Length: 114
Image (cartoon, rainbow, N blue to C red; front, side, top):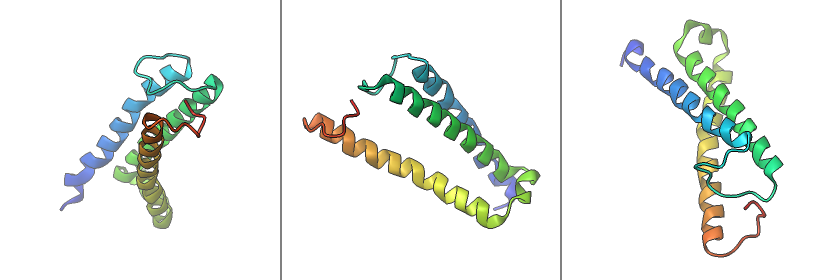
């Protein structure tokens, strides 16, 4: 497959990451619409959402690094490491979410998150 044919993936990663930022900023500022739960400590909830916004911005930039020539200035091992971390973080986030939400629905609430 030619490189020009797969450039859309880097742009899609960038756009997809940028689309998640507004809802996290909204939650960080105290909004409650579409909120997946209620945290006991609203300050931690805000910090988590500001952090998520920064991570999403970094993911958008990484998506662009994959398709632009200025991304080639970064060493290959570093790009591969960032790519692997970028793949593993959402998987770990999903597993954590499934476990905590499952325990919450089962009535076990030992994490103190909600």
